[in-house]
Image 1: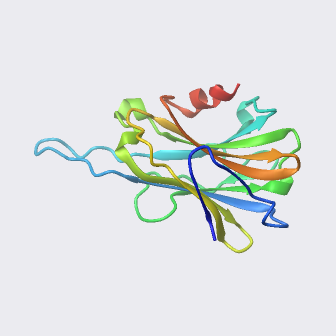
Image 2: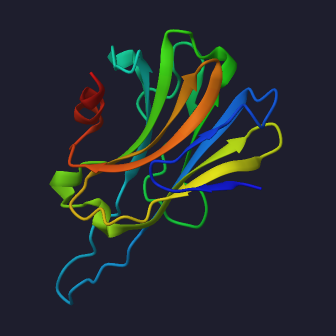
Length: 195
């Protein structure tokens, strides 16, 4: 049975899942309905982009440690982005990031999972236009959902979101539900928060 997390809550991934080596980080969201005026054109679809930021001693050290639609695989092979969904349309997960826990080099202690809206300021889009956002972690051996965090706060005006982090603590892998909205306009600015 999956654990339903609240903001700020932490859960062990490996303690109750002996032999866990591969985790699927699944993210989903829906675009809230928007009114279109009679003479106005249909607004551009909101393109949310999931990314993983690998940290060394809690800090972002170099651009190669970003896994996103422009760099689908970390050089270690430990983190792989499964591709960009440009609209978030349809039910279920929108993007997946695979984490091979046993392959994460020892210098990395955290993998922060973030989502930002592509060209948010240019398109005048923000997370107040998104609903039903969630992150869930799946045991890749059997596709069982281990935990889920549904974001329920008001994120009006926010253009990016720190969903959560997979982190190593005393030889054990854990997940922390963060749910922190930011006004960072792009992944570069968002990742610089961790320098």
